[in-house]
Amino acid sequence: MSSRSEVFAAWTVAVGTIIEAVASTERFDLTDERREQLEVVGVSLQAGGDALAVELISEDEPVEKVGSTLLTIGNLTILQGLLRDVSEEDNLVFNIQGNGLQALGGSLILTDLVPLEKTKPDILVFYGLLIEITGNVIQIISSKKELAGGDGARLDTFGAWTQALGSVLGAIGVELAVEEELPSVLW
Image (tube, rainbow, N blue to C red; front, top):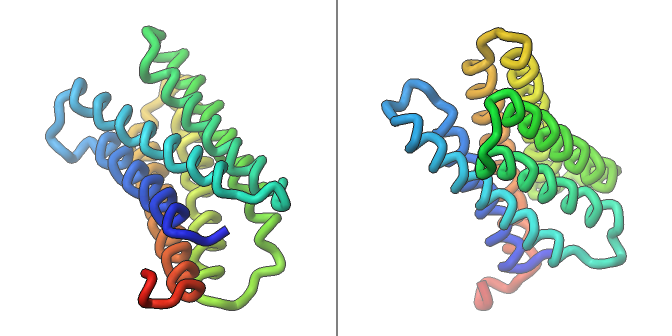
């Protein structure tokens, strides 16, 4: 599964995670409305990129297809909390569920990548995904902390940027894999 469409899907997800991370960063002087708008755009891009990736995965790779589908559903779950008129508590529950689905989907894909070939693209994709999963788990912890009445904002920001770093590494890995497979004249 390597094509220009894969590269587009991977970078769409990466840009989405970066936008979402910007939205969660309190140091940026943004209104609450602008933060929410950026978060909706970021999560939507992630869901769209993941959905495109699902369509590009061969039926011969069912574990990767299910994992990518769970990534998409996870982002759509988070998006549901953002777009629906729900309480802050319900929005946190959507975040926990969505990030949990993403972590599960990413974990399934990781199992499909083992044994790891020692090429630069494979290493970037593997560790990028592992870092993304870590970001998802951190965001779950931050949402649970918020639900318990604590302040999880910094933890959420750290998780969002961790996820963004992982998705950028993965996108670079996908792009390198495609460059290796396609003649430079076509690229």
